[in-house]
Structures are given as structure tokens and as C-alpha cells.
Amino acid sequence: MAGFSRALVLLCFFFSFSEARDHLVGGKADAWKIPSSESDSLNQWAEKSRFLIGDSLVWKHDGNKDSVLQVTKKDYVTCNNSSPIEAYNGNTKVKLERPGPFYFISGVEGHCENGQKLIVVVMSEKHRRFMTISPAPSPVEFEGTAIAPASGAASLKGSLMVASGVLIGVVWM
Ligand SMILES: *[C@@H]1O[C@H](CO)[C@@H](O)[C@H](O)[C@H]1NC(C)=O
Image (cartoon, rainbow, N blue to C red):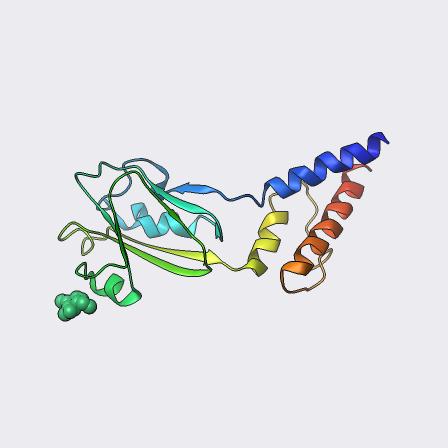
């Protein structure tokens, strides 16, 4: 009985990893600015983060000084701020509701050209399955072993159950 409730706790623990997260852009409130160097750029930050469907991007800069424009890939590349998809000020939260790339540039003249721009690529459900499992504090490597190849949301739960079951077995030994 004790084992069963411990298993439940563990299951809840795993599902909590699949909850939506807020990502403060650049990792700090004043990060939405012209980067001081290439290694300081917002895209370097984005490459180190994992964005999943349902997560949100959060900006906390002073809305009087700078804005955030969500733009097309073309406008991102050319730093064209004349017809954004969406325009936001400071204290903005943008929910990432689909997989694929999102493009953002500064609305202040000259800032985008100097590197104040951001691409965020949101992972598909397929990636999410692996991401949900990988933060587990276990030395066991699951990639390609415990999880059978599967597709679609229906199989997501099944794979999770299998993976959790295996983990529980490992933890209890
Ligand atoms: C910027 O985009 C607008 C609307 O798509 C377009 O009319 C304009 O020519 C573009 N400007 C530049 C410099 O490409």
C-alpha cells in the first residue's frame, strides 16, 4: 500500500514537469536591449532554453523605452517594423500556442539592426514527450530504450506511464 501511494506521488511529480512554464526573455528583466556582444545575444539565450506548446514568453522591461514586435520571418530578417503581427509594450506575456518559430524584434528604430531580435522555436508534441521525462533525477538513460516509438497525444500518456513505471522500479531497487 505504501508502495502504491509512493508511486502516485512519483507520477504526480512527473506530470508536474509537463506544466506550462513562463520564460523571462533573456533571463532577466532588463535583457530586452541591444546585446553588448554576440554571446550576450537573445538568440544565444533562446538556444539554451526549451520552449513547449503552452509555455509563455515574458518581458519585464520599461514599456516607455522599448517595445516588442512579433513579426514574420521576412520582417525579422530585414528588421522591418512597419507591419508587425502583434505589438507589445513592457510587462508583456505572450503565450506560445503552436509549434514552430516565433520572430520578435524591437520596435525602436535601429535596435533590431543592432541585434535586438529573437527567434523562439516551439517544440512539437513529439519532443514534449521526451522533455517531460528527461528532467527526472535518475541516472538511467531513457532515450531510445524504455520508450517505444509512438505518435500522437493518445500514446503520450501510455509512454509516460511506461516510463514512470520503469523509473519507479529503478528508484525502488
Ligand atoms: C516593410 O514592410 C512593408 C509592409 O510589408 C512594406 O510595404 C515595406 O516596403 C517594407 N519596407 C522595407 C524597407 O522593406
